[in-house]
Amino acid sequence: MNMEKQQTLRGFATISYYAADHAAAKKWYTELLGIPPYYDKPGYAEFRIGDYGHELGIIDSQYAPNGPATQPGGSIMYWHVDDIQAMHQTLLGMGASAYEPITERGEGFVTASFVDPFGNLLGVMYNPHYLEVLKGK
Picture: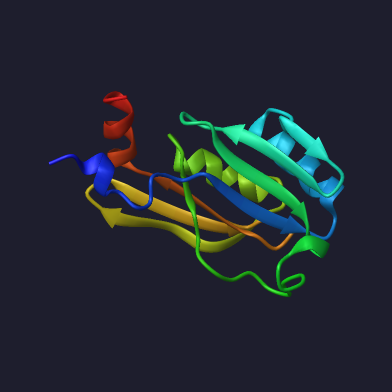
């Protein structure tokens, strides 16, 4: 059985975060990630990050499909981190607010989520499965 041909969702491509203050959001994520965006135009900046070069887009909220959101909502995409406690402290220290506390999910999985200073949900997770997949890369 060839699973590759049966996969409909092939992998995470891009996540978009919206911000009314695009310049401030771009600066904040540049500091958090430790790299500048690889693509940077007025109203849109994009970072390639992580082991697989996933894309994080920072978009001026005027371009949000249904207008700017007034509160956090929607799905939470979790980024794997090696030290969730340290990332928790980093994000709080940078002005993010806790959305969901550090939560043990069982079998080594640990999550936490935050609201960045621009109203976006940002999830972090220690994920043993991610590390197993990475080893097989």
